Image (cartoon, rainbow over all chains, first blue to last red; front, side):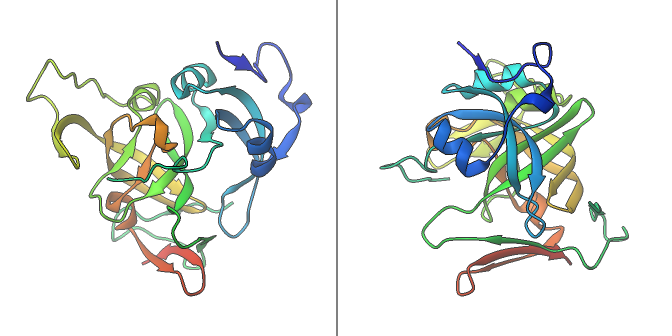
Length: 88
Length: 150
């Protein structure tokens, strides 16, 4: 079940708390987040602060529900997860 | 924010644009990448993959963004053959309208629409189809990845 933090029909985005990527990862560990980026690092262009729109352990559920209006998705756990190595 | 368009050799670009990202040895290089389609924009934390000809975006997102990605395993011969570590797969090859990292944006970037194993925490990769438009430096001595105009 998708747990909405924010839904456009329910709440004004301005009322949603902005937090750093690290804070979001700490608050919602090992989950996929759908977020709106509100501040970026000037040197790297990488997101600094975000507003969390949705969270779930299933990426597909998050993706399907956040739309394509310049939203960002990422995993808050270690990449790769402990005891897994990436092999492409 | 200034946008750099540098997909074709003749395109104009800003020479003062530079993306500089801190990296750590022994860790995969992950960076947020924006992908644009005719229906919208999505941003991913993508894996930098200097060994891959193509970039990869999730199949569902490709469709959501307006790309025609409907290759099905039951219809062999319709897609692009891709070699993985253990298998051959047939995937949709698409051309992404724009792919951007920070102020650096490339147009017409070849990509595959493919769902990566979710356990890895990686949903997209940034391959040579994007990197070929820029000068990319991985400097573990200084601890930075830099991407800049050619």
